[in-house]
Each structure stands twice: as C-alpha cells, then as structure tokens.
Length: 338
Figure 1 (spheres, rainbow, N blue to C red):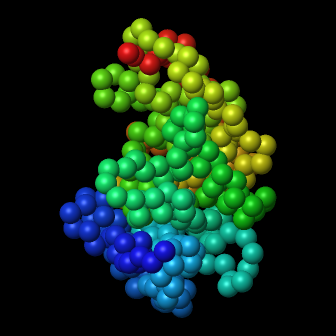
Figure 2 (tube, one colour; figure 1 turned 30 degrees about the horizontal axis):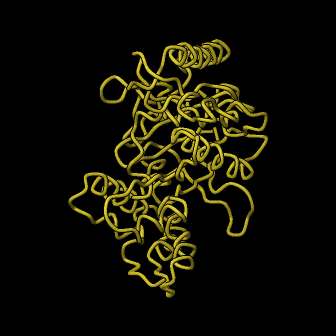
C-alpha cells in the first residue's frame, strides 16, 4: 500500500501550528537543541542524533516506513531527554557507541545514575488504521481492546510491556532512571489523569488510570473504564471478561531495576518512583529532578525525599497501598448506568 510518508514522520507533526500539543512538543525539542548545540562535550553525539532524527524512509510501503522511522523516534527522544537533564543541572555522558546496556550516565556532584531512554510509539496496527481509514474512527495508541476488555487494561499493559523491555538494559548495581518519551502524535490522546490511580470523567463516571496501574497496580486490581456509582449493571453482566488486572504493574514485579520512571508528555513531565527499589534514587537526585522541564507535582508519585530515607520509603509504600485500597472500595459500588 502506497501512502504519503509526510503524515507519519515524527518531525512533521511538530509543525502543526493548529495543535497545542504540537506547539509544546516543538518548544521542548527546540530548547533541547539549543542546550545541546552549546554543549561541546556532546557535539559528536548530538550531530549523530540529528542525522538520525531527520532521516526519511526511501521506501513508501507502510511496514518498511514504520520500521525505518524507529531511529527518528529514538533520536528525538534521546535529544529531548538529555536536554531536560542538562537544563536541570545534570552532567550527561552517553555510553560508548556499540556498548550494550543503558544509554547515558547522569552525574550530579559525585552521584551517578544510569539513564535508559525509550520512545513510545503507537502500535503498527493502530497507526495503519489511523492513516488509512476514512471518516470518524476511534484510535487506541496502546492497541484496540478486544471483546470483553476495557481500554484501561490495554494502556496499563502497554506500559508494563515497555518497562519490562527496557528493564533489560538497566544495571543491577546502581540507581537508574527509565525515561519514556510520549511527545509524539501517537500518544497525544493520553490524558494526564491516566497517571492517577482513580479519576472522574464527565457526568461523574469513574476510571482507573492506565498509566498508574501499569506501574503500581497489583494483579487482581479492579479496572474501571467509565463507571457510575448509581444503579446499573456491573462489568460482569455487560460481557466484560477481564474486570481486574491480569498482571502486576512494573514496580510490583520481582525484577524492577528502575529506581524511577520519567514520563515526558508535551505539556507535563511526570516522575513515578519505585516504592520497592533495588537501588534507591539518591535524595539529592530526586530533589533535582523535580526541577525538570514541565514537571507536574500533582500527578507524580515520589517519596517525601526531604525526610530520612527509610521513613520516607515506608510512607511512600503506604501511600501506594492506600491508593490500591481506594480502587477496591470504589469498584464495589461502581456500575454501568443505564
């Protein structure tokens, strides 16, 4: 199938002046370019990333173009991540070319952490539907829910899946940061409230946040898609086969090397800290990270790092457990209103 590739190149979307998210992502990208342009230590790395970012597929066949553009996505995500970190005071050093493992070392005074950057993309199937189908259609960046599934389940699963993939690159012996860039049009439909354990839609309908569940959900956590507290049918009576989470969130798994995850959206930057870390993110690092560009405090989940570490971690773990209990309680009353 032939198609005009300008509609799918990630750089082309940044110049959609009619879209507020495009303008925000463009500003964020431009700021990162400006910072890196003046960083002589990163000159060679930056030049290579720019070359990758602007490459254009020679093939017009959809599948091949989608695969080739992966390098552009990655390059833009890395440029923005390094720009963000440099702006809030970190010294960033890329790993040697060809070295397996994480992408960067970020240093603050004498403290060093590992950073792995990943670009979140829409699935190939959803991208094809978006670009080829005509008329009104519903697009699900994390994949269309199958019969008997909630859309929130797909969002949670996509973040668990991505975190598990990138976890393999992280070290066992030092604090690490997983950086997920969602500043591509693929994910502009993701609302910031998906980082909350529970929130309310129009007309008082409850929904569990898929992004939050993808990191903090436990197996069996109830899923709410658009539920009322008024009389109506429970999920099981509406043909929903999977009303609860079938897998644990990333931080609730045994293998969870990331000390924290940063989710970078066009208008918001969210920090999600691991409540059960193998390597605790140093207090001074966490304090500096809240200076990151477009940081969103209400939707971030971090320990009270101004307190002593062991006590702060216990309080944070308790906060996560309380959120899970809240979801369970509300789910007992939630119904789909007629």
